[in-house]
Every structure is written in structure tokens, then in C-alpha cells.
Length: 495
Ligand SMILES: [Zn+2]
Image (cartoon, rainbow, N blue to C red; front, side, top):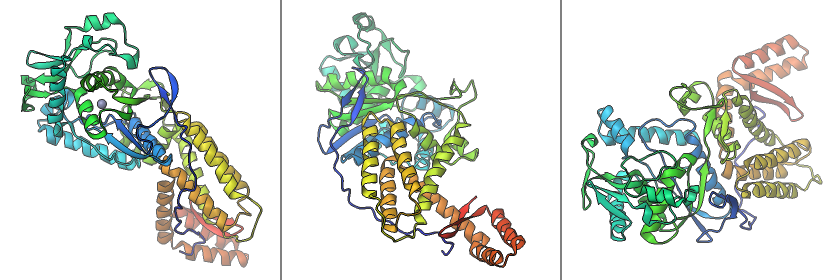
């Protein structure tokens, strides 16, 4: 390409920094930040509750997965190897009900929504978990775990189902401060067959559901009888299968804290006598213009709806990243203006770096500038993922580089670019946006034969024929292109 834009392959260098392990994670039990200490100092096991594949997820649901992605990327950036497990709930009350209503087999029904979910992850540049176990592939593990609970007296059979005996587990509800003895006493004998139930109402919850007619053809013949697993036991069985009896971090939306996570803890710890997860991280909800997303309000949007409205899905990633995970995110579609401005700022910065051709020496210590801002970024992220401070550190870095853009040389420009891509190992949107921009630009330059138009424009300007120069400019504009005259010569950009 001879448009005056300069870019080339850049090389990831070996990380030349070491990090003291200072990550602090908010602990919902003590309600204080707790220093993160991995069980294995080199490897972190994390489990995030995955989707129940009975419908298309909405943009608020996606917050959990963007947050899990950020967490995983940052742990890796901090030097850990990460084993990330996310379950797929493909059998529960909702999937069965939905498949019957749709007159499809449970598998056909759930596979369709799983495929759509995976598409959303890809569009948001979310890395796939290392393992994505499906509940229906792990019935045996759930049966075995239930049997163990029966053996230890933590579970009992009633009406063909198996229930967890809350009264036998003294720490029940600790995660959400639901520790009142009377709740547990009241719970005894009150059975709940539903996967979900009202907050603050503890019930002896179901581990294995005996077959009922409304389950249609969804059942397994097992040692526990004919039936299917309860929702909570799915996560316990799969988390422990892939991460061990005790693992580092368990994540999920704040709505899953009770009863789901409380029940996961009870089942798992009762069975093993060991702590289940050492850290719990819950992302808050997304609300739209002050309102909860709901069908009755008519404000439930999927990622597809955002794309149809003309927004790049990566803008949604940025919007989600920008909000601290524990804060309710109140978003309005007008906020996309600000998010788009942030995206543009990153892309334009990268493109400007590409235009540096200067090879002269200067006295800027770029390495020191990078080290300082890397430090600020890490400090912010280590503080229970203080993303706004982390973004501030990056903006500050870009401002500082921009101020000396005219004098920095190609070596320094390369270091800047490598650093930006290093940060993007955590953020996951700079490189894809930059790539998309260049692909789009190249396409438009080809379509417009922009090189010829720019050459003609230059000739016309030299000859003082401004009418002709303007005509060339308009032709470029018709193809969505603009020319920026810089010290390095004219640069073609997307309008
Ligand atoms: Zn779960």
C-alpha cells in the first residue's frame, strides 16, 4: 500500500517485568478486599457459571462473560497459567419447559441457543473457556456426588427425589449472611423441587429430581432412580471434576449468589469436608436507562439488536469493561457516543503511532514512561479490578506520547505499540478494533482507487488548482475517506 500509511508486523517481546502478587479481591463474606493467594502459585483454577441455554442471552447477561474474560486475561497477564471452566446448563426446569413448548428434543433446542451464545462470545472477543462441560454429559458425576451426600447423611430421599438437608450443614448461607438459626430450622422438612426460589427463603433443595410427567422424554435411569439432576448439583459436580475439590475463584452474576452459589457451597463442602472455592466474585447487573431489562418493559436487547442498530459489538465489550464489576451498570443507548469516542481514541492513537518515520535521537526515556504507566495500570487492576483507574492510566500514557508524537522515533514508536498490545492482552479490544479499521480502510482505498485520487489532489494543489483538489477530496469523501495533511505527508483515514 502506498497511501502514506505505515504499519508493519510488530513483535511481541518476552515480558521483561515481574509482578509481585498483590492482587486483592473483594470477599463477599467479610465485605473487605482479600489478598489473592493461589493454591498453586503458578496456576489458577476459575469456574464461572455459564448460560442456561433455553433462550438468547441479553446484553446484560453478557456482562458476566466479559468480566470472566477480563479476570482470566488479567490473571494470565499477572503470570499465572489459568484453567477456566464454564458449565453449560442444558437440562433444568427452563430448558425442559422450553423444548416441550418448541416441540423439539432437548438437545436440538439447547444446541441452537448454545450456538447463538458462542457467536456472541466471539463477537465480543471473549476467549473460550478451557473446558465447557455440558450438564447432560456429566449425569454420572452428579449421581455419584448425590450418593456421597446420602451416605454422609446430608441428603435424604422423598417422593422419588433426593434433597439436601440444610439443618445438617451449619455454614449454610454464610456467603450471603443467611445464617439465622431459625431459617435453617424452618427449612427442615420444607422441600423445594424448583431450581430457583425466592430470596431469603431457605428450603431443603433438590439434588436429584424424580421423574414427573411434565419432564416428557427427559430423564435418566440411574442408581438414584429415574429422573434428572437439580440445577445446583450440576455446577458442584462439574467444577470439582475439572478443578478439584478446592479451587481458587468461583464467579457468577450477583443473582446467582442465593440460592445457587449457597447451595453449590453446601453440597460440595458437605461432600468433601473441604472448602469449595477460596474466592467468590459476583458481577452486578446491567440496567437500561434506570430500568431493569424485562419483557414487560420491552427493553430486552440481545447483542444482535445492538449490531442491527449499527453498533460494533466491541463497543459493548468496552462499555462492560469500563464499569466496575460490582457496580450496577446503568446504560443508555446515548452512552454509545462516549464509548465510540473511547474506541476511536485508541484506534487513532495506534494509527498515529504507525505514521512515525523519524529516526533521530531524542532524550525521551520511553522505557521509563512505559514502566511508570504499566505500574499504574497494574496497581489499579490489583485493587479488585479498579478499571476506571486502569483506563485513566492508559489515557494518561496516550496523552503523554501524543505530546511528543512529532519527535519520537521509530524505535520508541515500536515500544509504544508493543506496550499497547501488551495492555490489550488484558483488555481485548484494541487489536481487533485496529485490525477492523485497517481492513475497512484498505477496502475503501481499493474501491476508491484512493492513491490515484490523492496523487491528483497533490498535483492540483501544487499547480494552484484548488477547485480540482476539492473535487478529488469530494470523490474520496464519497467513498467514506478523508485526507489528513501531516508533517509526514497526506494520510488517508476513514471518515
Ligand atoms: Zn453455577
